[in-house]
Image (cartoon, rainbow, N blue to C red; front, side):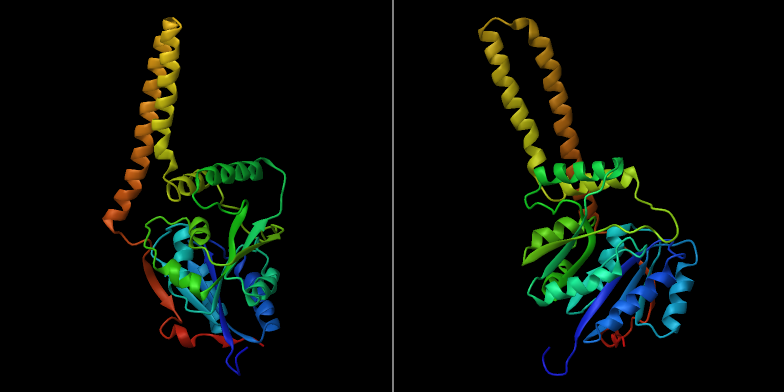
Length: 310
């Protein structure tokens, strides 16, 4: 530490209908922060359009003196948008993003901070290998994403990570309408490392990770982080042209209709890939905000909203 000036750490927590978990989460995170009293802390909760008593619970915790900043979004904009909203309002020396359902263990934070102090600008967590259909689908999705991605994402990585202020500044510069933060954090570079963690059971409520979210993760990882799918039509067309030419030379013309159908399918696939990219470009051109904040609590002087947790 430089003199008596304490470094600041912000914890960004997106929440959606987490009324049952707020009290336990705040108690555990406060205990962790008090054990790391050499830092000044701020907790940024982003209410992503909750329909239960999440906001009331957060107000209660804030009134009890916890260093809580609350951003209430006007509706549910999605997990990634909620995290980005929290990052945009943070200015700490280090920012930790994690979910508020207690599946990301707060007790791992000291290790994240320790690695940050060792010089890593990004400390990314990855889930320890688990069995089950859902985990198998997620692993498969990451393999597909990394096959296409220009800069691979750590397999099984979560949105539980620590980033240095330098990384935070670069992420704030990125105006993507539908960001895939896991990919963007890998893309910005800097000195990165990973650590494993055990996924904890939810204290209350139900997991909202659906097959649709898995598809969105897969699509975002492929189309937002790589242009390689656009080469699919060219490569497939070239290969089938060569195969068709060889078939014509050796007299296997009976298969011509097969190649016609395959070429037609390739054209449709190529058009659908182009459409996916154009759809994302269209969203960017519209220039709509990624999220809309309807209410801010303890936000006016954010640079002064850090506190010592002892």
